[in-house]
Amino acid sequence: MNKNIKRIVKKKNKSKIICLTAYSKNIALEVDKFADITLVGDSLGSVLYNYNSTRSVTLQEMINHSKSVRLAVKKSLMVVDMPYNTYNTNNSALKNAKKIIKETKCDAVKLEGGKKIIKQIKHLIKNKINVMGHLGLLPQTTKGKFKSKGKTIKEKKQLLNDALMLQKCGVFAIVLECVKSATTKQITETLKIPTIGIGSSVYCDGQVLVTDDLIGLNETKIKFVKKFVNIKKYLNLGLRKFASDVRLKKYPKKKHSY
Ligand code: KIV
Image (cartoon, rainbow, N blue to C red; front, side, top):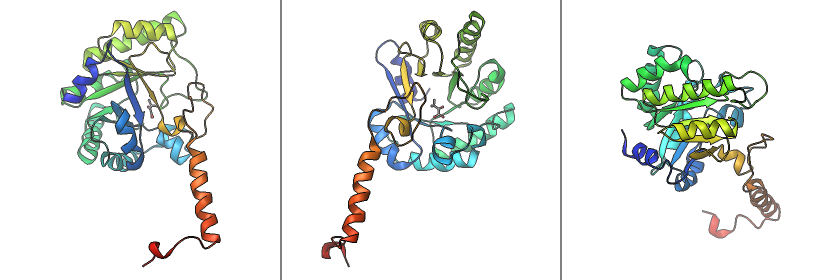
């Protein structure tokens, strides 16, 4: 197990794990200062490309963005989402995970699902690929509206079983998306590996958010998003000043010119 991964697993029950998304070098440079895990999430499909779902994200798009992120990530663990349809079989999962790792030099990949993809996850881990799990709401397979998971006893049991199955396979952490608090608490207390929540309450061992959402660059009404800063305000200020200075011929000055 990679040193960074060991460090993250050891944080369970000690200190919260910080996970943030980055899709490019300049954001990754700042994210890396605060995050234990920098995630190149396939959420980039909706955030950057306006796709209706993450299903449209291609392997090449994930690789291109990840290469940019890799330029800035020095300290945190870099995890890359495997896009939809790239891990349908053991062979395709391994071939595509190897391609992602070879081209982006990331530390681990993340796959969505439990029992249904357990063979592929086992196969990746057997081949020394570090895997992060993702349970609860699965954007790659969810059709329609985002709904919470783990409400009924049946759903709760199934989520717990999936989480235990992933742990047994050797995943180092599991993202829990939109999972009810009581179910999250039970899963987190049962597992030895950390849970990273998104819309899944304070009971997780860590939290993840899409950076563009929390800095207010991407407008969203998703319940679990908190806008920690309104970066658009500052962006607007700078751009307005540039436009005004150019119009007033205050910029460029002699010192800016060759
Ligand atoms: O795609 C993504 O950004 C994610 C996180 C939000 C968990 O999977």
